[in-house]
Length: 304
Image (cartoon, rainbow, N blue to C red; front, side, top):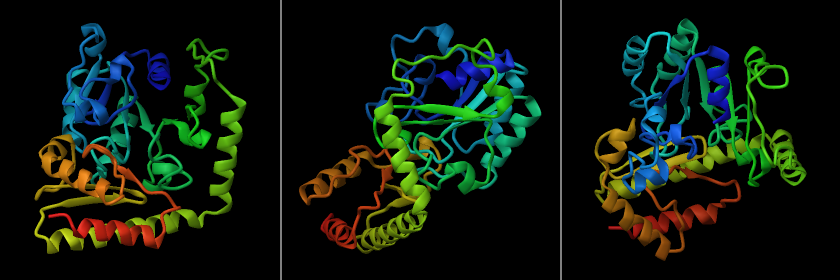
């Protein structure tokens, strides 16, 4: 919310582009074709959002650069920002296709549009530098969630100096928060990030564990003749019961939700607690042991 306000204040423009299935919190302007819980409940248009607010939110399919260019042409010099989760996690784990993020970066630079990476999921998970480092793309603004508080409630945004200097008291874009700088959250976040900094091998270990889980699960589903797509990058992974590649919200929604629900409840009975929606990425934890992975595979093998 604050990042979009800042982008609007910096550019003097009001509209912004978000992508179908990307969830950026429950502020009114973002609940247009959002993913996550709204998608799980099949709520794509939320009552209570004024038309005047919704009109400034433009949506495009994820991974569709041509659709973004079309929106830019239709709303010439009116778009303040493009915001996206660089590796989507609220329609399952959806990877950016080759050239998609670089194309957005080029378009934003050309049209003087602020590119915002919502790294609430990817920040400090894919790497210490988040998706920007992993995918080698520089955003103008970046948002983070409770990862910077080691799970405690806190958020942050940052970015290029000339944009951030528009925030009061240097500029006139106002931002405030009751719990800003809460010392308990800050020391927790400092401790976590210090641990990641001093033990960078955690990322390699997480990636290896996730790849192993992906390969072993894929082999089980193939052996049981269950159509599936398993998307994965780093420690983000998701299972979609479908024959077609899952590259955006529409293809994710076409996957078999009933089979996923059956799979979820089967795994739960076996003692494996997955995210309860096909529209949520799985986020692996480095505490996951070889025995845990074995148990997960054994449970998967029993699913018919």
